[in-house]
Length: 244
Image (cartoon, rainbow, N blue to C red; front, top):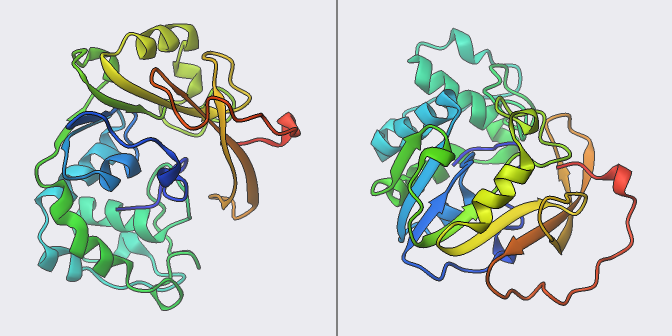
């Protein structure tokens, strides 16, 4: 629905499909896995109140609401628009810097609709997908341990410092214990530098992040179920070059 730092939009198809009719996505962000399998019973959990509020706005919006928002061009000042604060926040995620962790209120070249196309129209056509979701603001550690497909994409051990509640807020030993104790199917995302679970190589990718530099990422996966990546040999790589 919106651009977000660490989003799995380009690699979501690499992850195993859900084995359960219920999906729980802690550390939700832009919730790309849940969006791919939207017709399941979905719960997303987001601790950042500003991002949570954007999700609630979208869940309650109509196609007409979204299509009625202005199409913006590079340099537009979103704060100056005659809109509600939550509409400005949503547009700040849509049209600000690519891959940001919070709204950016000056439209970048990334957000210019003349170059990017009608991204608002795409959102409008897809908001039906989230109408039945449970969207929770809070810590995922307070959520009951129930049988489901848990898609867990936390701030990465090395590179997750940009989030409001980033890697400095996490004890990764405790996170590992929490992940491995979840009931059902558990899929955990990370970078191959991480050592808090026995992660397997998933894929290489290069993104344009919020600073518009090409960022090399070597993505990894851990799951309590067999995956296609269990026997894939790790490629040699420069660990110091990795970012989330």
